[in-house]
Length: 402
Image (cartoon, rainbow, N blue to C red; front, side, top):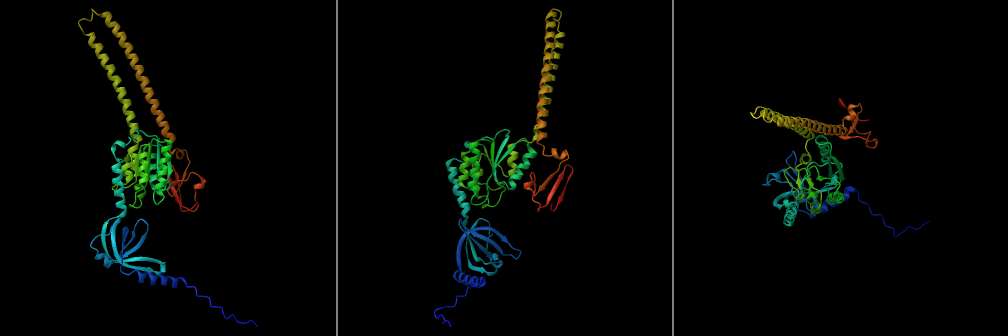
């Protein structure tokens, strides 16, 4: 019979999730009572019950906060996004979600937010260096044919730009360099896109864009590296960050600022229908000018025929008539040549427009498949699990699945 091990000890009990969470709850809530903290308010949300939920943040961390209705009613000012505040309250652990939050009991304003302060500092610095001065602004090309775009390939801003170019000026060719437009990596990727086009010089104008957002969302366009890349870019640049009221640093440095991605297109290219109208008007103007010139010459000949010296200069008149006939013939030839040249140019432009018409295939009996607002051009793009829309020239039909 084996002797018992007198030195063995029972294994310690491993705490469960609830036990460990309650230990953390007791420790945090006991240690952080009546605590003060300062930071920037981010995205405050008023609930139907009158409570306010928001995040307090600085450049390195975030703290979820709750202000109960009774505190909101005593606040004395409106809590706003980007506002710098000093809060007093307690840390509370919500065990079911394993989440802690700061329960606000008092709040007071503490000046403008850290991001806004950083924005103002950089703005003053770059302005003092002359990066915003009008003398550095490059002129936009009169009729750009190749347009570079630095933005997210999956963003709504790019889709808006593509759709507007197709409608307004389908002759333009768009070259897109994908870059994140939000988050810590975004500024570096935007700079890479600008430098890629700068090194190649393969476009007439460059647009950097995104679809608007909060101060935090737009922050990559307030980074110094983006501003300096724009300033060094040899290509005319357009900043179209999609925020109609607020400006970013990129807006000040770029050669042209557009309030929205769609407006950027309107500022760069004319409407193709306006060009057609102008061409028609020039054609009519040329025809009218030639007709008036011929009429003037005819009247001059008639007036010469009525002078008292007609009989004395008969030979001269005959020579003038021959000259006039020659001029009329030459003018008619020139008129015909110009009209033919104008008609040829007009037909070439119309033929080019017909080639670029995305609905030509539909008119020939083909159809298009769309998913999530995107034209599915390849089998690899098609997702059989998603709803789809089939488009013919005379209508569409939608299906929930393939």
